[in-house]
Image (cartoon, rainbow over all chains, first blue to last red; front, side):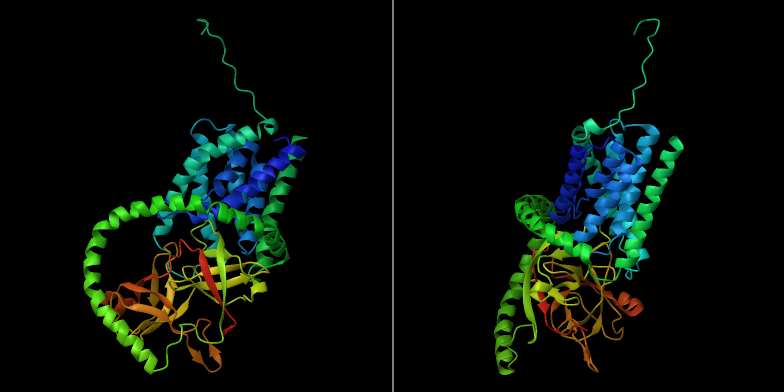
Length: 181
Length: 281
């Protein structure tokens, strides 16, 4: 990703808006008793568009802002979301820009991963003294389904917004065949 | 050139990971810090505006969710209405009797004992993950709120203040993994500890109850509000918590626990009240 002042401003604006929207809207609505989680999908999209470093830095920043606004111990969300962004970026660097269903599918898979990560951080901090309900798994799965549908427009929108900064790999050229097709 | 780039990337990644762990180590258990105070001061007005602006959209989405639920519950509610209609007649006379008794015993005070003051706040943010049962409210230390203060809403107990800054506070809900509230069943007085079932804010567990005494479905559970040797519970007594939904004899005798449904809808909190100034041990 080629970073200019204008692109950086756009990135910051998108990340801040994403966090505000998550806390004020998505976290407080429920469909099928589950609140969608936009942030892992947002961070994954950054990773898919910019690579490992963009994904990791975006994840760290989003996590830090999230923890600040929730007055939670700093670093927990950053750790999880930076890993999410990094993994998305690793996919991008290995396979190039995702095609068709790959981006929303990755958003769904990485949302599931992030939810597992949040659970692991809670366990690491000793905050899970109680029994864990089986609904946690249901919640994580439904969140991943939401992330699939959110990831679609999110990826397309971000790709459009950051188009000037994206480094597109040349597509492999099709060789002309003897038939000329 | 490529190697240098790779090394730089690895260094940044290592820095971010180490930074996360360092922040976690430094800030865990602190309540709040300068960075959070600064960020919250900047974003509180934005969150307040976003909260009000997005309320109609939230209500619309939640309406869909409730409609799906309502369809399934319709038949069940029809049956319940019939039962409740019969109970209502008995209830009215009981209420009248209760009011008289309260007057006689001079107990006609509100549930909240004297010494507590109320700070009313609005939920402005909610943690996105199912693992964190926390909300952020728009009242803080400037309104007299302190760590450990109990938080209620019109239906019952909601949680306790776990971190506080000038204009906002974090509330750890009773459904949070580390939450524990001493409670008693009314009218029997059986005491126990309210524990959550992580991931299911609509269900709580009353744990460590006396297996010799039996709790029944439908009984109400309130805060115990104990006081012993100068120490006292952070929750005042008799704040409604929930209603027993499952109380099998087997579970009570083997595991010393029953299940309950909290009165407060922990998924859809809006206005809450912080009880400030009481026991803060």
